[in-house]
Each structure stands twice: as C-alpha cells, then as structure tokens.
Image 1 (tube, rainbow, N blue to C red):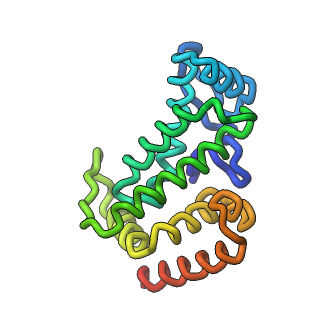
Image 2 (image 1 turned 90 degrees about the vertical axis):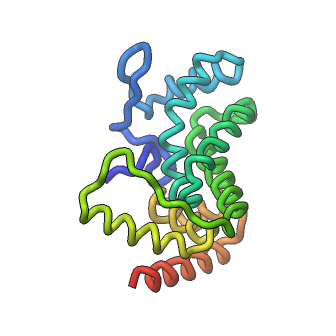
Length: 194
C-alpha cells in the first residue's frame, strides 16, 4: 500500500500523478517540479498553485499521524510556511524533503500546543468497513497515547522510511535521541495496542 510521494529517501513515487491544465503528469518528473519551483520563486501564482496542489496530499499524510485530529490544521500551516518561504529552497530536487521538514515541524508545534485539550472524534466522509473502522480506531487510540515527539519519529521511520540518521537530521536531534524515542514509542505503542 502506497503512503504518498515519498519513498525511502524521500523521493517521489513513479506512479504518482497530478492532473493539471496539460493533462496527467507524474510527480517524479524533475523538470516539471523544477519549473514549478522556479516559477513559484519568481512569483508566478499559477506555478505556486500547482506546486501546493502537488504538495497538499503529501503534507497531509505527514501531519496526520503526528498531530492526529489537528492534522488538517498542521497541514494547512505547513502549506502556508511553504508558500511564505519557497524562495529559501535552493535546490528544486529537494522539494519533498524540504516540505517534509516543514510539515513535521508544524505538526509537532500544533500537537504540542493542543496536547492538553480534549480530543474531538473524527468525522468520516464515507463510512469505512466495520473491520477497518475497528482497526483504525485501535491504531488511532494507540497513537493518541503517544507523545507528539514519539509519533513523529515513528511516522518518519516507519511510514516515510527514513533512516535514524535522516530522522536525526530532520528533527535536529542526536541519533541517540532518535533511537531512544523510537524505543519508547514502539514500547508504548505495543503496550497501548495490547
């Protein structure tokens, strides 16, 4: 099952596509991404709009597991940060890794701000199958019991497929801290799951 444009190492997947004015284009097309980034950096509103359209689902998949019910808010804040700081991106090929760093930072910030607030149940657009609903509820409950920092390392390591060193660089924490958080997160998740 595919999780988003990022693969291990943060590259766009070859099967991902976006439909734009010119038809379907693959997200892994480095020329397209470079043109969009450069256009957005020059102030081209259409290029920025298409770039944000490409990034929105990816950013949402990163923010959701970290910020839980506030994932949509975190994704919105991350996309605003991308919009405001697109000129700081030096290498268009690094777009997804750069956006991932922003998304994790915003998700952690929002999750930390709202940690003590009571949770609100999620509403579904389309009702899932009963078995899926039970599994999703169990996973959500187990994740909710983890600290945002632990959810972040689990998501980056196991969903995004980053190495411990890459997680360390992204979160700007020592590798030993990443390992410690992973150990605690896995233990807490197993405990909550059981």
